[in-house]
Image 1 (tube, rainbow, N blue to C red):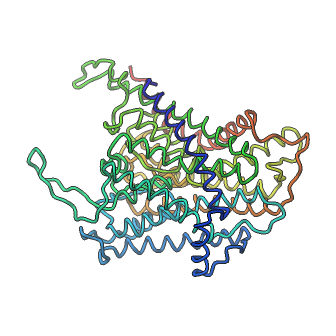
Image 2 (image 1 turned 90 degrees about the horizontal axis):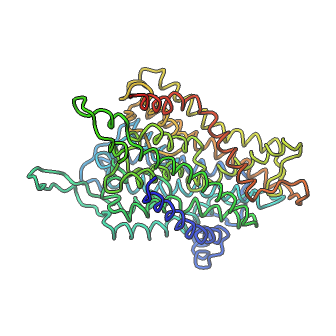
Length: 571
C-alpha cells in the first residue's frame, strides 16, 4: 500500500469514530421517544393513522406488519414503472418498463438491494425515480433499522410479550433519522455540484464540434438517501462514477462516510439499549478489524497491477514494469484513483450498499474477490443500515453457543439463555443466503438462458454469475457488470433471491427477538462467558470468517482463486 492509501484509511476511520457515537446516542433518543418536539408530531400522526403508540406487538404481528408494508411498496414501485409513460414528470417521454425488469427493480428497491439491470437516465422518468425509487430508499432503510431495534429490545427486555410497534418504529426512523440526515447531505451535495432539477435533457455542442445529450434530473435528493440508507441505486447508470452524482474527491470521501455512518452508530445504540456500552464497543471493534483487513487487501491487490500488461505490449513487444508498479487502473475513475476506488469498493460491499465509483468487473482477481467475499459474509462488517448489526448479532449468538459447547455449559448472551429455539432461528438466518446463492448459481450455469448472459468465458464468467447471485441474495446490489443480467431469466431469478434473501433472514431474527424478550434475565455467575473484551472479539471474528465463508470456499476456488493463479502463471 502507498502512503496515500494509509493516510486515506486512517483519516476515514478517525472521522467515522468521531461521528458514529453521537449519531448513535441520538438514534436511542428517537427510538425511546425522548425528543420533545418529535413526540408532539408523532402523537398527531399516530392519531391520524389510528396507531396506538403504546400498543406492543408480538414478534409474529411485527413480522406480518413489516412484510405487508414492504409488499405494498413492491406493488407501488412496479405500477409506477409500468405506467410511467402516461404519468407526469416525464419530459423525455420514457417508455413503460417491461414487466420482468419492473418486477426485478421493484423487488430490488423494496429489499434495500438496489440491483439495477437498467440504465437510469435512459429508462426511468423523474416521477418513477422520486416517488418510486427514492421513497423506497427511505422505507427499505427504515425497515432494516427497525428490525435491529426489535432484536435489541429482545436482549434488553425480560419477561415481555412484545418487541415494539412496527408502525411507530417505521415512522420515527423515517421522519427523525433518515429524513434529517438526508436533507443535510443533499444540500451539501448540491453545493458541490450534484444537480437537482426537473429540466429536460440538454443537447450541447462539445469543444470538438460534436453533439452530446446531457441527462438532467433530481439527483442530489436521491443520492443523499442512496448513501445514508446504504441503498446504492444510482440515478445514472455509471452510479457514483458519474460527475453529476459524485463530482469531487470531497464528495467521494463524504459519500464513503455516509455509507458507514448509521451502521457504525447502531453499534453504540446496541450498547446503550442493553445497558452495557462495552457490548457496543465489542461489536464495533470486531467490525473495524475485519474492515481494515479487507480494505488493506483490496488496495494492495489493486496496486499490484496486471502482469500480462507488464510482460507483453502491443504487437508482442516487452513493456516496462511500470504497468505493475502503477497498479491496475482499468475500470477506475481517474478523478479518484486506485486507493479511493478500492476503499469505496470495500465499503460499499461491506455495507450492503451497492453504490460504485469503479467497475468491480475490472478489478484484479483477488481485488475483485474482496468485495465478493464481503458480500458472502452476509455483509456484517458494519453492513447495511440495521441488517449489518442484526446479522452480526446472529453470529454473536452462534459464537456463545460454540463457546458453550466447548465448556459443556448452556450458552448465555446478555443474560439470556440461548436454547434450541434461538439456535434454530440462528441456523436459518445464517444458511438461507448461502442456499439462495449456491442454488441460484447452479441453476444459472446449468441453463442455456443463464449461460447466454456471460460475456467472459471461463473462471471470470463463473465469478460474474456467482457475484450476481451473492449480491442479490445478500441485498448488496453491486455487480460484476460483464454479465448481461437484464433478461427475463436473470430478472426473475435475481428478484426471487433478493426477496427471500431479505425476508428469509428478517423473519427468524424477529422470531428470535420475541423469544429473547420473553425470557427472564439470568444473573452473571463465575461460569458466564464475558461477551466483551479482546477474547470475545477474537471469537466473534473467527466465527464470522469460518462459518460465514465456509459455504463458499469451493465456489470461490472455481472463480477468483483459479483466475488469479492463471493470471500470474504467465511468464
